[in-house]
Image 1 (spheres, rainbow, N blue to C red):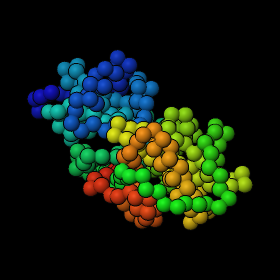
Image 2: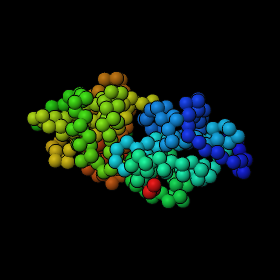
Image 3: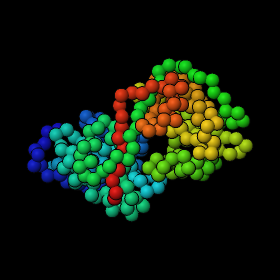
Image 4: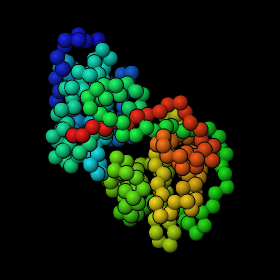
Length: 283
């Protein structure tokens, strides 16, 4: 869609009637940002804003506060011909008050393709973290044994312990809530826990995606790291996705997390060229 640079942008909360237009934006814009999140559930909320020109939706932004003080942008889409900077200047301010009211202190944005990073930096965002993507396209599996550890499917009763483990293993920008973990447990192809003598020591989550499978989370309790539990969970996740006929498996990890990268390299994952920057700004 081509627009005049002087065309006024109006911003309001997205409503259910906007769903077809937002879906069209996600399908046809060059640089959408959409993560594994049920965005339709948030239509009508103040933290889901839509930008319009002459009444026609040309951009959308959903921010969601799951756990801790960091709210993440879960959906962003902008029509071609609309300037990124002017769009941000109009669509970000209405999010601040409702996110702060919910307990948010930082707004974070995962810039997957680099399309919004320069504009974010010009508006006070700083790099929170840099992520790398790793991929595995063979069925090589090293010998893995975690003595005395049982692997099993996660159950609803595990969720309180998994949240405590998750918050101990990761820093606040990456925390999951009970609700988010329960959604993963119900909707992912694989959600397994590692247990020893009744103690939950780790978990792994993997899902099918358009190009194969993606391991979205691998967490091990700090006190249990170095005991091959991460390797056992990773091997189980790979077995689960391979059983579906998947050959290409990806995952993301922080660029500076050498321990995780060594584990994935041992399993035959290799780095892709793409690096993703996570940006943050105080609310």
